[in-house]
Amino acid sequence: MGWPNRIQSVPEDVKAFYSVRSELSVSKDLLLYRNRTVIPTEWRRDILSKIHEGHQGITKCREHAKMSVWWQEIGQDIAHEISTCQFCQTNRPTQQKKPLITTPLPARPWQKVGMDLCELEGKRYLVVIDYYSRYLEVMYVPEITSKQVIGKLKNLFARWGIPEEVVSDNGAQFTSTKFRLLQSEYNFIHTTSSPHFPQANDLKSVKMTDDRAKTSYRRFYNRRHSVKSLPEHGPGDMVRVKLDKEKGWKTTGVVVSQATTPRSYIVTTDGLATMRQNRRHLKVSLGDDVAVPVESQDTPMLETVPSSGERTETPEDNAHEMDVESHSPGPRTSGRVVHKPLRFRDDIDK
Ligand SMILES: [Zn+2]
Image (cartoon, rainbow, N blue to C red; front, top):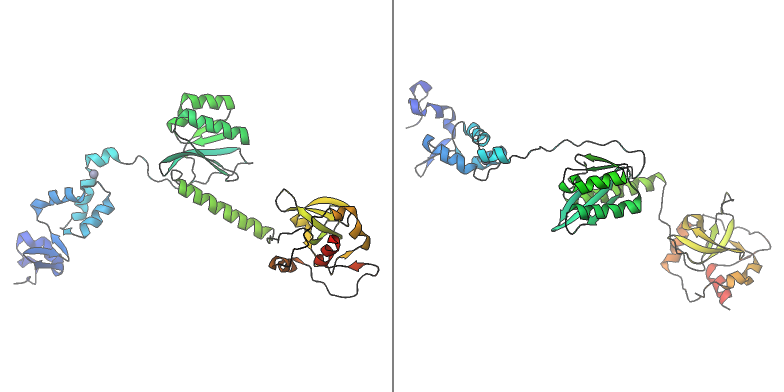
């Protein structure tokens, strides 16, 4: 047995296999092509319909076949099977994934917004994104009806103003008569196309995109402005203050308390005035380089400093050193008494 040396000597019905003869073998009465069963002509129709049973695309079907069956032209037969499948023709997705189109940046925030409905864990949300700032609002809508969506949008527009242009898909909620009424009442342009924000029907990916955008924006901002996070202050910390009219850090002061606005403090400067200072305009002094006038210790303003004499040195205090301008412990300006912050506070408590 074996293959003849020349194709001419091969019987007509097996000539087709001559070119792949080295890949063929017999195992338990089955003819194999590598590890795939060679299917006789009369069974191929049946096998083809089994391969395409789940109506998967050509790639999946070919992968499936590669693991089990083989005949010559099997690839073409699979392609033909799919292209003539009635089910696949009627249920084919209407659109292929479109290439990403970057929309031109609007001139200002809230000029153009995109909106879409998303679902996460069985709950529906209305997602609105500002094309300029990438600001994102996610609003829970118990039922996706025009009424619910419009209610959420009216609330949104009341808070942020009415955009010039709204972009949405052709979903029923955005094409209803009610929505058209909202559009004419609020006078915005309504563009119905894909809002272009990435795979917006998946809320998780929207959130991820939003987080990514914000993180990279934050990083960019921090690098651009060489931002370092600054240590917080406690009452009694001695600080140098940069006043609006001043060029340098000329004025000294004491932190009275934190202000209600973030990163702001109530500071008394030389016991004369109480002002609110943003953290950016404060520099901590360890005391050595702050010369506090003697008389300031007795000013009424300083007596209003909340008693916090028990406050002991914490690692936080040491952290302040990082923010202090380097200075040499050289001779000081005469006529001024120097106090360290803790000592200074002790004096007040007496
Ligand atoms: Zn099909």
